[in-house]
Image (cartoon, rainbow, N blue to C red):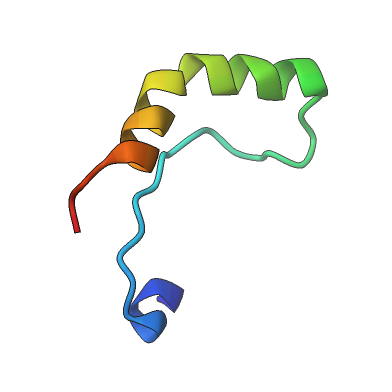
Length: 47
């Protein structure tokens, strides 16, 4: 909804929640698991 309000359609990567209870090691593992998807979202030329 915030993206709509700002006129912005951001790319996103879905990961399992909750996030706030994860250890640093668990966060690192999630980032590694989703690395290719994250890079694709960050470098996409789609508007």
